[in-house]
Length: 209
Image (cartoon, rainbow, N blue to C red; front, side, top):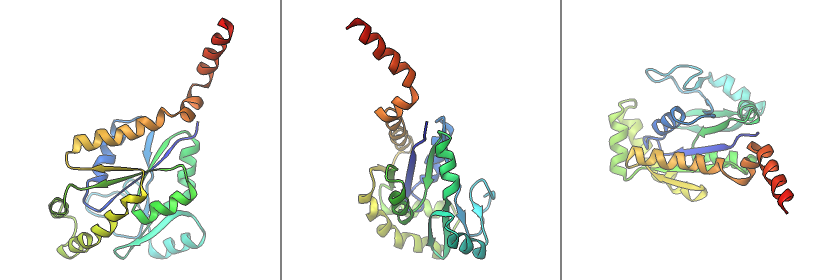
């Protein structure tokens, strides 16, 4: 059975990473694609676990070789998703999450037209500013850059299938999980998963007729 591709996008500081981390911890057969980036690791980040931290020259070479499903430059750093890795996981029947920006999301959607796209919004800009400041991972200058770009980023929600407002974490998590669960109950996926069961049920029905 082929897995589904979920694209989750949000302005920086909206809580996307925390939501995805908890979603992975409570949902089977679900993984997140590990992106490549040229930015420096933040405290506590591990190469190959949080990101594949890549030299700029190596990243540019990979772009030329067409290895990325999508790539973009954000705040002076490159980010990209390995196409080979994503396809291998989907073919293994695992549902895959891409945590990428809206530009990358639209690039991927052109290739994986069946991808399910989710945009996460903060309840207010004041809350977004507070969250960016509280995590103490970026300088004041970077925080202001992220806030300035946030409105432009958030305006792209219209291109997505679902929107979640992350005001209450548990509620937002439940809503995100509901999207995953609903996709797994579609006719196409249930036919793949329970082909033998469905065939048996229909055979019994035919016998009664």
